[in-house]
Every structure is written in C-alpha cells, then in structure tokens.
Image (cartoon, rainbow, N blue to C red; front, side, top):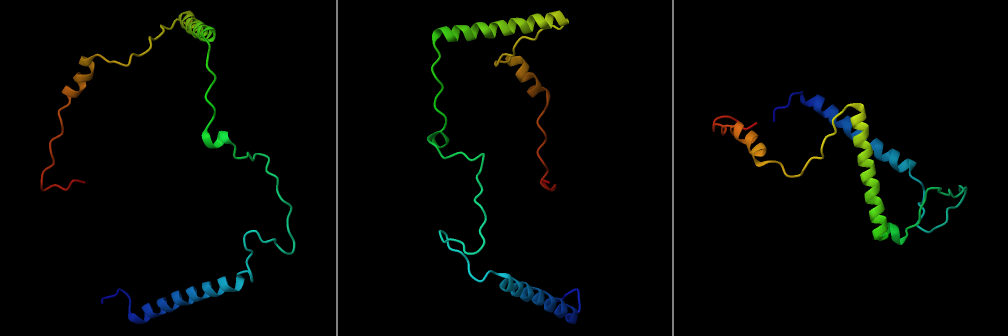
Length: 136
C-alpha cells in the first residue's frame, strides 16, 4: 500500500493510539465503584433527603385517556353565544369604520376557476434536463 507518511511515523501514531486506549480502560477500571447497588436495595452510608416535587402530577385516568368530553351546550346558551359573536363582529366593523378603514369581507374557501387556472397557464413547464447534464 502507498501511505502518505513513512512507515516508522505510522507505527508511532499507532502506538500512541493504543496507549491512549489502554490508559482510558485502566482509568475506567480504577475509578469504578467497588460494588453497585441493585434496584430495591437500600443504600448504605450517607443518604440524602428525598426531594418532594411540587409540580408532580399523578397518573390519573385523565392523563392516560385524555380529558373528558366538554359538557353539552343548551339551545339558550347556543343562542346567547351566537348573539355575542354577532355583537363582537358588529363592534369590530364599527371600530374599523370609525378609523376610516374599509372592513375586509371574510375569504371564501372556493376561488373562481379563472383565477386558479390563469397563473398555471401563464408559466410554461420547465424543459426536461439533457441526458449529458448531471441532475444536481
């Protein structure tokens, strides 16, 4: 094989890498605790106080199954809500007219077909790439 560095330099680099790996393993073994604690086993020695979480919430049926459905609205409440909505819309229109701004009508979901087809017909499709040119 043709390497860019002479063989003795490669051997020195390999020896340094091996020394680093062996040193890291030795430090891991030396600093590891003598014996681990199994789950459920009580810790021996100095123990800290148990922290009480303030924001903790228990796993209830609501968190698992989702919130309960909203209560059904009666006909009187529906009428009252519709009146409030109309009153808010009328107040917004009156405020806009007082400011001298013409209120905008709400947009409809169906656009006229001529407006939709005009931009598509105005721009021709791009020519297909040549075979000799790369795609990127």
